[in-house]
Image 1 (tube, helix red, strand yellow):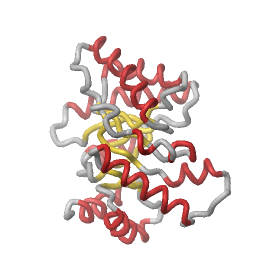
Image 2 (cartoon, one colour):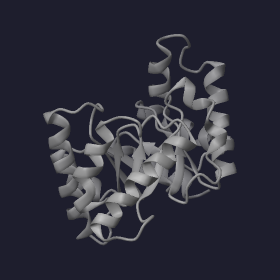
Image 3 (cartoon, one colour):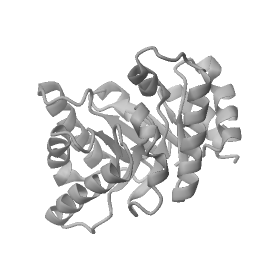
Image 4 (tube, rainbow, N blue to C red):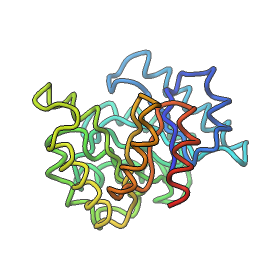
Length: 234
């Protein structure tokens, strides 16, 4: 997965361009991990998008970002998707092996109920969104055959630090390096997240490739071609 476009599940007008954008994957975000009407609508919309994408041979692979494994909200996320399981899920705030394995059990239950092969739903771990998660990066190797990639989300990590460090600070470089090493140990790609400023994208892609990242999550449709050019050439 070298290119993945992030799309809010309720972004209806952006769906058609997203399905034809040429990205390897499309990540549907359901919003803040709280149980409310907005999240329920986003789940239903995600189900419809998954169904529509399956009718398009050239559509990107669909992933849905689910709530943290230890939250009550993740059960409702997975229940809502059970009748139209996506190709994979991004696990929010994943804090190592235990979270990944806990989600894997939950997925196995839904796969059995849906009559699909166990293990058919892959997992990308958003593995560096909190300070505590950084200390669990070495636990992913051999944790689950579902693991498809480890993803780095600097914006969420900065938010979790509540201003204790600034963007570009040395500890963030350490976190990035640890995630790349953890992905290599687990035998999966490391994914970076594109900057919101498109003017910085080419530089960010080149830096990510040098650091060992294998792909990037795009935050806008017009970032996909730049990301593909940078990483498909790797």
